[in-house]
Structure formats: C-alpha cells, structure tokens
Image 1 (cartoon, one colour):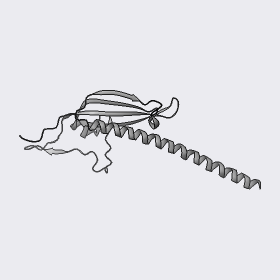
Image 2 (spheres, helix red, strand yellow; image 1 turned 90 degrees about the vertical axis):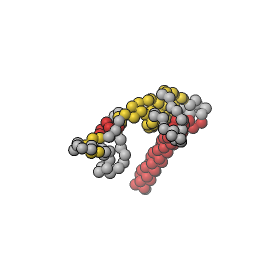
Image 3 (spheres, one colour; image 1 turned 60 degrees about the horizontal axis):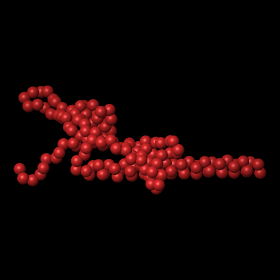
Image 4 (cartoon, helix red, strand yellow; image 1 turned 180 degrees about the vertical axis):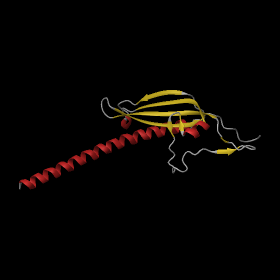
Length: 166
C-alpha cells in the first residue's frame, strides 16, 4: 500500500510540474506573439511611408491598454551608407552577419566580372544610401523584469527613378 501511495504521489507531482511548465511556456509564447504583432504593425507603417526621416521615438503602453499593457516600443530610423563591395566580401553589414539560409556552396558568394582586355577579376559594388530601421520592443515579464525583442531591416534611401515620359 505504501509503495502504491509513493508511486501515485510521484506521478501526481510529475504531472503537476509538467502542467505548470506548459502554462509558463504558453504565457511566454503569448507575450512573444504580441511583441511580434506590434513589430510587424510598426514595420509595415514605416515601410509604407513614401519618405522616411531619421528619428528616435519611444512609446509606452499604459496599464489600461489591454493586452499591450506594459509594453514599450522604441523605433530608430538612421540614414546610413553601405558599401556593397565590402558587404559582399565580408558577408556582414556593420557587424550583423548575413545568414541567407542557403547551402554553404552558394551562400554569400562574390560576384566576379572579368575586365575587358585584362585577366584581373574585380568585385562590383559601391555605396548605397539606406535607412536602417530598428524596432525594439520591451516585453514585460513582471514588476521590474523585461525581455527585449528586436526587428531590424534596411530600406533604400535613394529616390526611385520616375517612370513615364523620358
């Protein structure tokens, strides 16, 4: 009888711990989903704007904001120049690795073009004006605990050529 009680107690404790950990994982997934939704909304607003300006804005949601209560969104837009030749050869954009999820044989390969009349190869590229858009979202975990969620992208700062009459 004692062995059956011990086995039942251990089984009940194991099930209870697994239920608690699954509830904790669900709450964490919900928080991350809300942060992802905020980032997606803010990013689509910025990318659909015809002209961007460098900015550094921050917004905190008050306690009566429903599911967004306690979240803080910080948007940073900087104008920057990226040298395509350096980016292609190093595989980095200012310290951020480019991981294009392709097989190693085709990942981040340099494009070489043979110069006419010479046997030297050169890498093509040059400076490109871009806006670096960074969205940081502070996810509330408790009274004074936060987790950060970051989304970053680049958008061309050069005006597109107008289509129509030459």
